[in-house]
Image 1 (cartoon, rainbow, N blue to C red):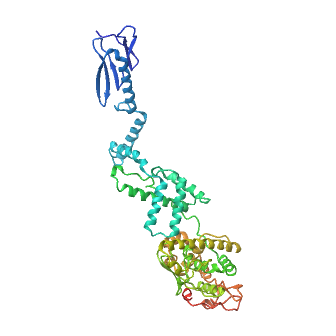
Image 2 (image 1 turned 120 degrees about the vertical axis):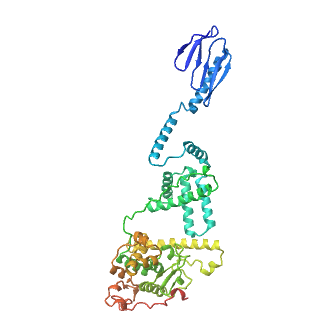
Image 3 (image 1 turned 30 degrees about the horizontal axis):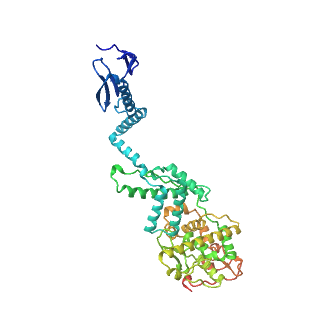
Length: 494
């Protein structure tokens, strides 16, 4: 005959003890594990849920404590794992709620999502493999090695790339590629710029750094995923990174006629060695880095021939030598007392190695020596130019020479020709280089002439002279004729 049962709570059912002195016997009544006791004639039953089925074990009545403990463990494990899907944890309920909302939205939009189990498998695999990505600093080093082996980059650009990636590696720290998100990258870039002596992170600077980081990530993930099956491919955290759009906030800075006159007047009297390199930037729109590589043999036949080894874009081009630029070259040759040799650089504060000496070196040594020499000339040129601006009482503006030349060349030769001379697109010219100037101001700018006679009077206003082009060599206020011009192929005459 079955014992009388007494129900206490929802999870336990107490019955009188089966032996004297044992008190009440509590039986576990859960959803994943439970204990049943019918009578003294039947054994104790332990039920454990496995998947969607119940499995029964028969135990002696005396082992009720052992049965209860087994049932409690089954309930605990089941509740934690949600194995029956009848009991879900709060985070599981929240996930399913989000999934249902997502399905409804996608279905209304006409794009039903994939199977939930398939998506979950991919997410679990990504979570499992996210630590497989290497450290950013290791990938940056591999990327630099790849770029160096591949070649095609100027030494100066490669050195700049190496400097930026080194600073970025220090700022990011020991982080794996999968851990570097867009906010983390921008914060690291800001820290790297400050560490390298920068005061602020301008939009254009941020764009350059982000572009480099995106290239590194794309290079590694493309190569890594090429050998993986679709379900094991790693996700590039910067795949959707968009570079900031640089809006034009102000007109490009240019030199006024008065500023150009003041600066060239100071160079003619105090820094003769700067005259050729400043003149080719002011009147031909040659970039600063290109002017530092120019030799006199590149100036011939009324043109400046910029080969692919000189230009920033690695595309050769030709820039015109205006009448006043030719006269500034002539002034420099006469003032120094000799015509420069064709192999000489137009700016060489130190002798450095000549072309014949460089040819004797192997390729790698030559590139290194050329880069070191260019860096030394760049530093010397920067110091001397800042001093000249200071003596002339002017504030030095970045790229003002090139901007002024482009603005005036457009008025004299037109948009297309000016873009071709300066080596950029018409769109880039209009956005970043050209400022609206009058045709008269452009003519006056190309009418800035070198000193004549005793060197004190400077013929600046050729274009305003009523006699026109025939007065180009006449000094205003000074009857001494302009200096005699050297041969047209100035750089070809030793």
